[in-house]
View 1 (cartoon, rainbow, N blue to C red):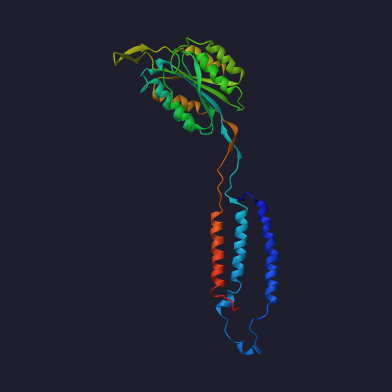
View 2 (cartoon, rainbow, N blue to C red; view 1 turned 30 degrees about the vertical axis):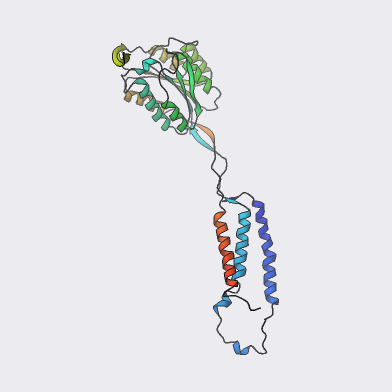
Length: 327
């Protein structure tokens, strides 16, 4: 519990002279009805009203204390708070070329990649994670964020056809590096997932890898697709026909990219293998991040106000009933 207007609590000091005044006043009071000799009443038992004699004053003091506390605005404890958590900065670079619609992974390569990536994100709540998409060109779907609810909503919208078709691996890496280069994290990682050979883009994959290396960014590359042939859906006349196409992954280049940046190359030939790849990457080192947390303020005057009202009400009732004075 904290007070927004804590200076009002100094008003409590005014109650001290009020209490002293009340004590002195009681000592000087003379009986309204005077008699010549009170010895006859010496052994008369005391009424319960004697024990309630000071109750109205006590109730008034309590009510005044509560009113002063209300003026000081009691609130639940909440403020900006700096804390340290363990995490790393990660950019997921995902290939969204049309070849990712091949169904050697279920339901297809892209959907399998999205499902496993979402599971990976859920398993790393303390990390800054972002998403870069690439095909013939590249763009950022989501910059680095710890708001994983937003990130997961955006990853659901990832689909083929968002940008020009093709496979610009170098552009995908370069875009992710742009998002990571100014990071203060000790560990900065790009997880690049593709199913083909780089055939477009103004930056070659190996040049992009050298750029990543210069910024201390490790690139983990994943080649996704089964060995041999893969069923690919072709829309023909309102129907879908499946054609078996060869899986052509440039494993040599992907291995070189990983080697240049001190990363590692993985091959995912099935949904389970793809999951194992992300589990392996999940074992990366962690680093400390400073995070600011905010909790909403809540005014807590209601119970104080209710208690003050009850005290005033009881005082009025006592003074006008059991403890009513004869004029």
